[in-house]
Amino acid sequence: MKRVLVITAVLLTALFSLATLLRPLQTVSSAPQATTLLYDSSLGTLPSEQNFGWQAINPQPPFHILASQTYSAPVTVLSTTSQLSEYAGYPVSQTIMPTLTRTAGFQLTFDLRVISESHGSSNDRAGFNVILLSEDLHGIEMAFWQNEIWVQEGNGTQLFTHAEGVAYDTTDALTTYKLTIFNDIYLLTANDMFLLSGDLRQYTDWVPPFGITIDPYEQPNQLFLGDDTSSAGAEVWLGDVLIQDDALNQTLLLPIIVNQ
Image (cartoon, rainbow, N blue to C red; front, side):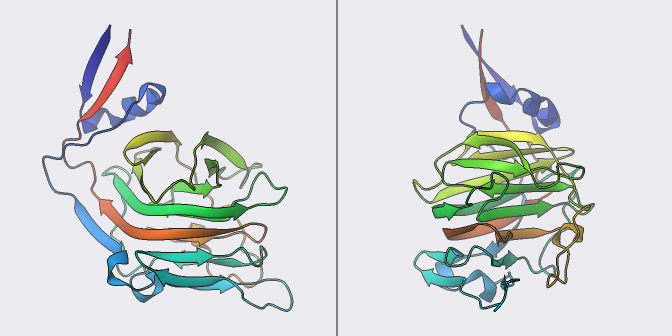
């Protein structure tokens, strides 16, 4: 027999512990969230022409940059496949970011399709990554392969190694991902289907290499989308990006089908 449980946002922590029971998620909102549209792909411009910066660095001689960003309606095409040694991507402008408080909860929504990705023989690197950090530097770094989405491990001896992940075809279509953070937990969905959840991390043990002047893991309310490794590359389509703060100041009705 199947039983449908309706759980409110105040029980969200318990929800994560039951992640293996999750089926398609449907959210019903009784109050508006504070939403900031960071990138509107319908405007026909690049993220770096809206609320993101553009950083491209090649730490290896002769230091030439081959990474590219082009707008091709209705998305931005980011490519770092020509030289895997490059870092390239979009750090958010801090002037537009709201304060991301874990106790209030916040949610990042972004449209993404991975066209191709290469990480050579490394199991711990990916050509496209998303970094999302709260005001107190707790958060998560998500790594995207063609067939898997996984988490970079945090501080300690296993820093930046392959942690938990989920098999998923990221190349199939432009997909709406939602990354929700609440207290000490994250949850990732794709087109409102549950994918992955787990504990937040800190990455403050990392020491920036030569040429990196700002440590992204020491920036409160941080968001980065792109290639942040010198040993992998990807071509991706990037659509709308928005952030919702105070995300749990509403009633979230999340049906869970429990098989008994």
